[in-house]
Image (tube, rainbow, N blue to C red; front, side, top):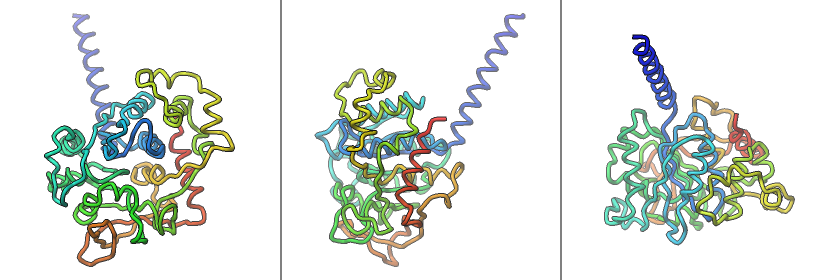
Amino acid sequence: MKNNITLFVFILSCSLFVSTGCQRKTDKTPVILISDLYHPHQDADDHFDLAAMYSVKGFDIRAVIIDYAMTEKNPGIIPVRQLNHIYERNAGAFRGLKEKLKYPSDKALDQKEFQDGCEKILDVLRESEKKVLIFSVGSLRDLAAAFNRDSLLFSEKVSKVVIFAGEASDSTFTEYNVGLDTTAYARVMNSMPNLYWVPCFDGGLWENNGKGSFWRGNHRELLKNATSLQLNYFLYCLTNNPDSTNYISFLEEPVNQTDYKNFISGDSVPERSLWSCSVFPYFDIENYEASSFPFAFFADTLISDKKGNISKNSAGNIIMTFKVTDPENYAKQMNSIFTELIRMK
């Protein structure tokens, strides 16, 4: 009898633990990240974005959709697995579509070998009890195709779609993410509900006149609070480490001081161009005050032409649009946000 009671108490304790754990998980906001993440990297800003996404404590990352627009590169499954190890998560990485959309309502069902990304987006929406927050920092190909397959599901199960793409004012300049798939970009901008638009530039390449998110930061400052595990994650990226087998054990090794100087702390290390990482926590409304950020979002009615040029139009889509509210201190504050965000407590 005593053994039976002990077993019952043990099972009850386990059940309570699992239940409590599940409750903590559902208290967080379910998130999908769509990123042109590769290893070796095409631009290391995507690794900074990924680390920031894992660091937002109110986010439950359900999936990382790897925008496969550059098919000559390897999808960034390794950095996702590394951050799962560091942050004790289990987010999956799913490769996206290979080809551009042929027309705005294209569901891309003909790309038979590249369906994982679209299907996972829809699966997460269907399975989530709470509304899902979607971020896109690459092309909008998988997002648009998934929307074309079930637009009603997006209306019902998506709280916000935050896209980092485009140019705020210069119609002669096509920003990189837009150029990857202009048809998908126009489809999202013109049709998707609950849209938050963060233009990458305002005034052309490497320009920000107040309506873009672009800023630059110094690696030494950005990573001054990083643990050795986090530093090794960034060094694995920045050195283009070719080891595709020991990438987890690499995280546990002592930080290579030569690499640390050459890629992070040295005076000759160039500044990092950034667009997204410090914007993410703005959407963790349980843990951050919107007023503490040097930017805000304002409603606008916009329309995109076939080339991805955005203009105001009363017949367009109602979109919440990014704007810098503290131009003088913007870059400094954005760097400080990231520095504090990745501090592991």
